[in-house]
Length: 240
Image (cartoon, rainbow, N blue to C red; front, top):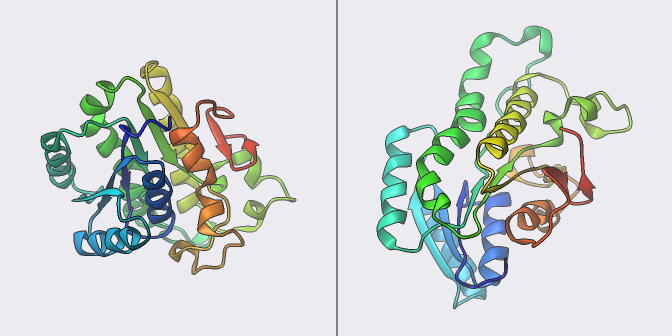
């Protein structure tokens, strides 16, 4: 999908994986909607990208994934612009609480699930009319290896030693959401991807991968003619 008429919307696009994904897809000549709840931060981020890509078609839109009204307003902005929408990347996410499993309470789940689980549902449902009108629609869920039960139970993996249940279960839920959307939307290529342990604000920049490496799977899911499968990282298919 290297057609320069391609349009993508990326949530949480003002920093980290979202920003780097914006840069890479803009470099393909795509129209990139950089969606973020902080429009000032998104505008500043887009301006920085334009310094190196002066011809990039970067557009910003306010979108708070926890707000139905904000999501609806963002849809109206994109629809009115007439760009269409070919690819939707649900990237916005928060780490939430890493309280130990036995100390976690029901209340600890609320804010993380609102962003990581309900957010992608709100955004996907709202933008489906535009996405379904595309000749080559794609839906990408940015998940995590921490959402895989198999990887969490593998002592050779980093995921094995990460404490807590809130973030992990939110990404496990997102994997199932992606799976069910894929069955309900056979005309849309739906992927869930694991960026890997990437240095971003989400982990205090402790990750071993660069943001470019961390966006490899996202960019592949969004743009490649052939993708490894329904759920994969930068090296290939991984278990959900």
